Length: 130
Image (cartoon, rainbow, N blue to C red; front, side, top):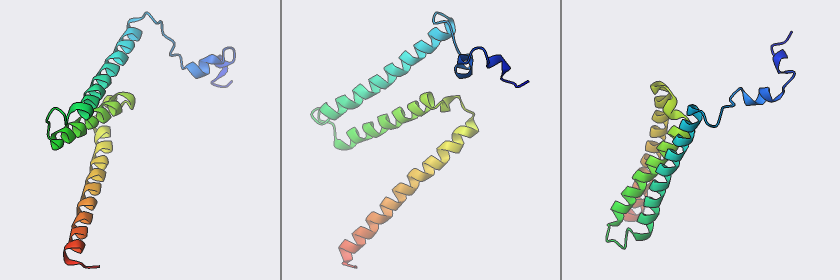
């Protein structure tokens, strides 16, 4: 007899995985609360980004400060989305490092290649080497 014989009567059990819950249970309410907290955090960060984009330069903030805030808020949002929606926050530390270290190296490579390319462009423009 196969291991799936208990699914022969009700095929929906194959797809649900037995994850049906009572909507009024404490676990269900905590999940809904977590969804609202995540939504609120991402909404507040997005509103701050839009406010900075629309009114940051009119408020007399220097461009480098506005850009720094944008970079910090974007990195926060990206990290938070990865943590919550991709469930990286639930993983072991070694798994997180396995993902973050290559990502950091990739970012470093991009910066290094842009820096090197701008140097060679400057050399070419300054000395006229072709």
